[in-house]
Length: 274
View 1 (tube, helix red, strand yellow):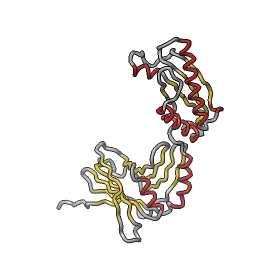
View 2: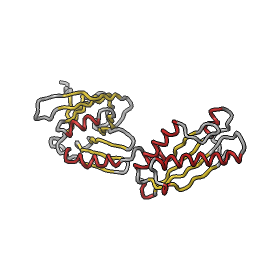
View 3: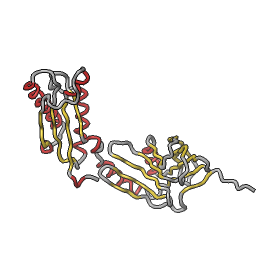
């Protein structure tokens, strides 16, 4: 007689392991081990919304779909609400929920629980219950870490470029938006120790005039960042190169625009790299 598999397999262990907080410069995790292979974590990363990660609970099978629910604690009347559905066909070993992780965290810190339902290829449906027991005691530490996160990552901000209209040193609206974002990052990431500014022009016009124009463009960027509260002591160098280092040959309007630029390059101490 053939053995019939159950339609649902319940993952997790009878006594949930304690939640733990893991902190870093660019990422914070509120995580819990669910068993030998199951791990769940609320992950806050610099410059990204809160995410919920569930790692490798399907034991090398292919994950087709994962559904995230909020539900009532087991000792209360059953109440379940679908928050987010993740569909994949690329053999991932980790389910990552982006949209509703913050909603679930709020629900769980108020005493509710979470539930993940996983549809696997050639296997029973897999359920993982997320207990909120002990979570509230760690929330303050987790949120303190989140509040210290920079607004972005160093790799994303290592080099920032703003562009200028022909013959001008005035920052346009687009450039000011870019510099506002950079200033917020510099004020939020204490591992950045310095930055360098390099001014450039396109190849049109007199070379000496272009050299002065590139200096004034670099100064415009410097003054704007300082005006947003960035420390003058962080400015390691301000250089101007005129037309000497074009990015393109400048044969078209679009190519010449790319050459009319100021580059801001950030540095941080070697000890702060993770």
